[in-house]
Length: 243
Image (cartoon, rainbow, N blue to C red; front, side, top):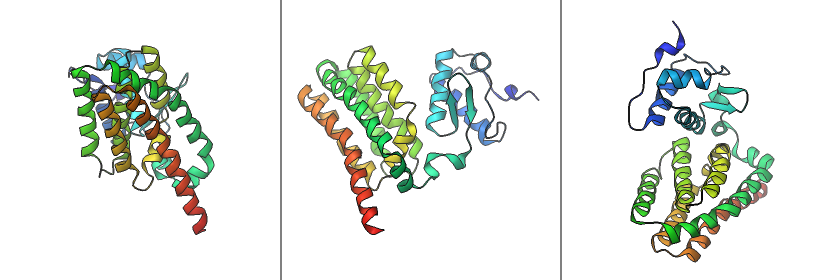
């Protein structure tokens, strides 16, 4: 049987989610194995009867979930779950990649405080409601062990603020940064007590935007993005003293 025959044409409102769900199911059933390349984008898009942008969004969802690896120019590969960042030693990874994490947040600090300030100035009632809805989703997952899902919703929160800046270049810059680098986000969310702390920071950012206070929104975003670096510093210092 041709492997593409296991998929159905998608006609649901949230197309990317449904496409991602079907592909994820096929991977979990073993129809695609670790290291195998998924069918070309054009073929997949035709099979699902969706546009290429919808398919790309679906693949990004799968990448966040740790199911696939997107290698530009080479294709999309099924990942071995044992190699996912969630299964590596947190301390060892941070020691080896601390500079990478610092660069990641340095880049975000150059973009997101501006986005937050502009969102505070420009966001309307519907925009505030959209951001609040995402924040409520995050709150419901505070005790969740589903780190990939937490990463996905966290990305939604920050991407939405960038969108509310009404500057398409800022939005594109941020998405090109935070969507591919899901491994860093997964690592950070594994830090002790970091999820509830992050949620508190999100609330402060939201309140500043809701009150249309650009100075407070910028400050809150800077605090939130510096927080992981402080937590990592403290975490590694404690580990070093205990050895």
